[in-house]
Length: 132
Image 1 (cartoon, rainbow, N blue to C red):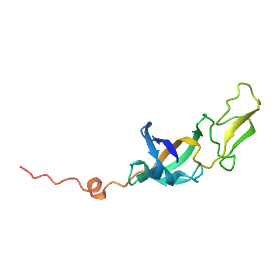
Image 2: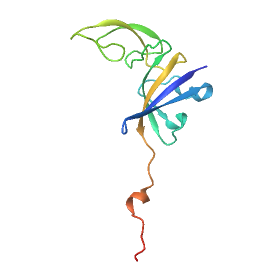
Image 3: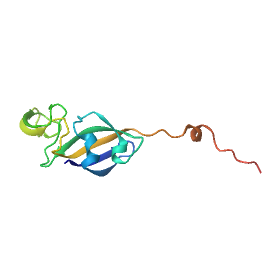
Image 4: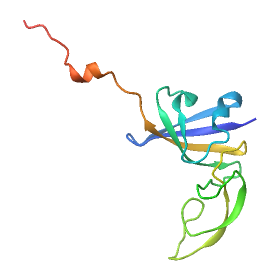
């Protein structure tokens, strides 16, 4: 069965944490695509919403959002995930993986897009202090 390392990044603070998921806990990610949202309760963050940003498989082959399906393909790249061109206009045929998460994926990169709402009363009303 699937075993994932899910990296959860918080864009507001610039921090990230790694959560390892196995078997039944990993099932909500199978079949999802890059760009979809997932409930944070899957990775022990109830009330949060996470967006899938990418990932890589057991051999380190990166996922790309513009390659459809969950398979490996050799595609011509001019930049982005999987290829960093050294010269202007350089293109190269590289191995990348599609945008669907399968059981061959090992690492999934996510970011927090929505945090739980704070209680409104604590922001609106300052606590009443007795006057002495």
